[in-house]
Length: 396
Image (tube, rainbow, N blue to C red; front, side, top):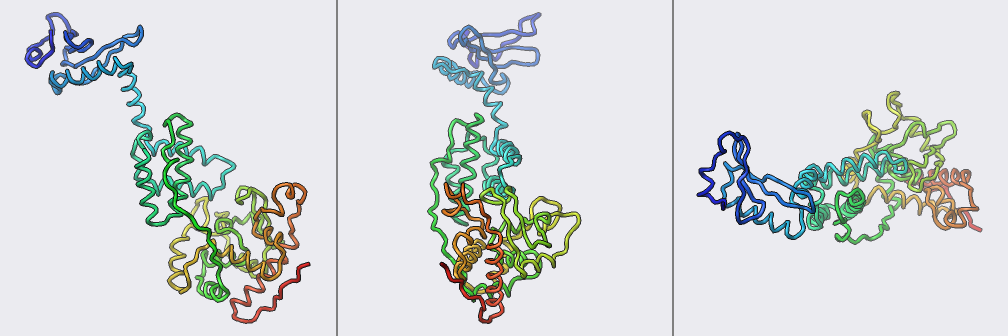
């Protein structure tokens, strides 16, 4: 019989049966399964030598006309070589594969990577967890290039560089998803990247003096002063640990896990830098020099503290990273040889890179100590507003 509204309204289970199927005469495999608890529409078909059967609606809520339309689509799909049951099972399995679920799995893998510095992991986590929060509820295979481009565009309004960094973290995450089989291709690869111009901002002596004098007491003030005195990266000082400091030898020793180039790095402490660390009160329950709480990260209030400092000091816009560039150029200006300056800021280039690096294993510890001591003398004079007694060293 043809399963129409008129012909199905009076259908009942035959006497003595608890399960009975009535098939449609026109659409192969389309039927109505009558059971004691009610009826359900079914569709069955062959895949090779295997028979498949699926239900797709209740008789009480889906009328025969609409059921026929769905059955016709299922029949057409089978003729095209598709397997509706397998597709339904896959869709059900993928319903839990959201952006957030895959991201949590990815972050768990990255968190345990010994080659990834804690600061780098923190950046990846911030990019994916906070910056891309609006994508979390989407199925991972539904996160397309347009959705990504819209989010990156939103982030670009607040900061093009931050949008670029978020994009980089997303590209790596989605490449991992493709490798795990969650998606077939990486939709972030062909999204646009904001142009970047290399920063050249160098703080003048007058600006260094204003900043130093305006720095507040406490973590942020101590960190920025140490950055001015040592030229190290912000996280290398912000996440400083007591075990990395030797007050007797006047050094900070950063392990490979905490340096960008994955090399041990010794930072000699000038007298002013040593005084800052000696004045710090150590919390016996916390190995980190800066920050609060029981977390594994050090100082975390960078943005708020920088905003308050900018209000207090009226100078041209600057960033924390500009301090490192300023120190590097400043040490050069007082006559320190370039390869020693590179050793001070732990930068690998011509003098330690490639073949030269194979044979040149010197860490220039004595030269670094001299360079930072002379820089501290120069900076102290600048801060105090007096003429510096540091004369540039003559270079051979």
